[in-house]
Image (cartoon, rainbow, N blue to C red; front, side):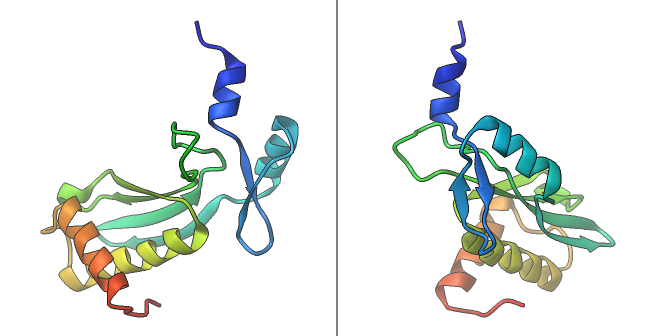
Amino acid sequence: MINMEDILQRSPYYILNDQHLAVEAPDLVQWFLWKSTHDCLVALAEFPWGKVSTIFLGQNTNWNSQQTPILFETMVTGVGSLNGTIYRYSTWDEAMSHYNAICQILVKSCYSTLTSQQLMAQASLSLAKGIEHA
């Protein structure tokens, strides 16, 4: 049987402050109120061949409560073999860095000849080299 207390303890709910930092919501009611008045879309790039979107999930998708919460998600849709590929992150800055790198790489490669592993490897390499992304 599923114990809701265990789920709430394992997967706390978060809201974003004005500096885009995730902070734990005081309670579930405050989280619902915040979610109902804030847009959780962080970034969206639409191309003729697909889109890349990053959202703030508002709840920890990392089931290991001893590890850093995973609170952001970037999804690639409509891009060949990458369609439906999801990447998850802990912070706004990490999510935006990878979002920008993914968009830049997709535009440069023009479509979908990359696998999801190649895409992340290139995005990580770009970030490691300190390439600035628009």
